[in-house]
Length: 214
Image 1 (cartoon, rainbow, N blue to C red):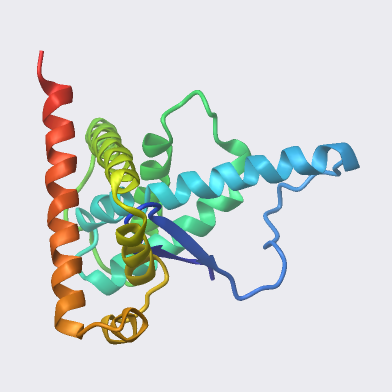
Image 2 (cartoon, helix red, strand yellow):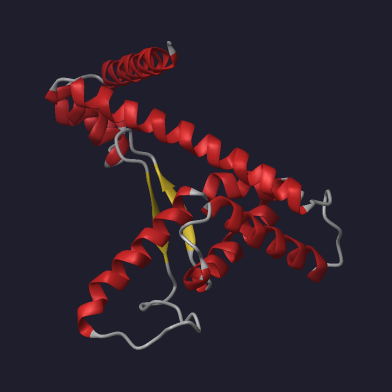
C-alpha cells in the first residue's frame, strides 16, 4: 500500500510516497505507449501524484466528518489514495480535483464502515460533499499563498541563517548535532531557531496583510 508522508521543510513542504513494490502498481487502465510518449505520460503521472499529495490534509478533514477514529481515518485515506491513483485516467483536469477526490473518499468511507457493520457518523448529501470540497479548495489556496510568502521571506535571510534552517528542518539535523557543527551551545542554537521562526512568521503575516489591503 502507498502511504503519503509530509516532510517538514520551511521552504518546500512536500510529500514522500512509499511503496511496497518496486514498480508502479497495476491500475487496469494501462495502454501501450510509444517511446516518444513516455516522458509526457510520466509528467502527467507526476502531476497527478502532486495533486493527491497536496490534498491529503483536506481529504483527512473530510473523512473525519464520516469516520470516527483517527486510525480508521488513516486506513480509509490510504485506500482512497490507491483508488485515486487507479482512476487517474478518469479524472477531468477541467473539474476541481477536490470535488472529485472527496466523492471517491466518501464512497471509500461508506464501504469501509459497511465492511465492519458500522454506520457513518453523519449522512452527507451531494450538495454537502460539494460544499465541503469547495471549502477545502479555498483553504488550500490560502495555504499555498502562505507557503509562497514563506519562500520569499526565507529567500531574504542571510545565507548563514538559511543554512541553519535548512539543516534543521529540511535535512532533519538535530539541535545538538547542529550545535556541534556550528561550535555553539545547543541552547544558543535553539534560541536562534526560535528567533528565525518568529521572524519568518511576522514576515509572512506582514506580506499577507499588505495583499488584503484595498
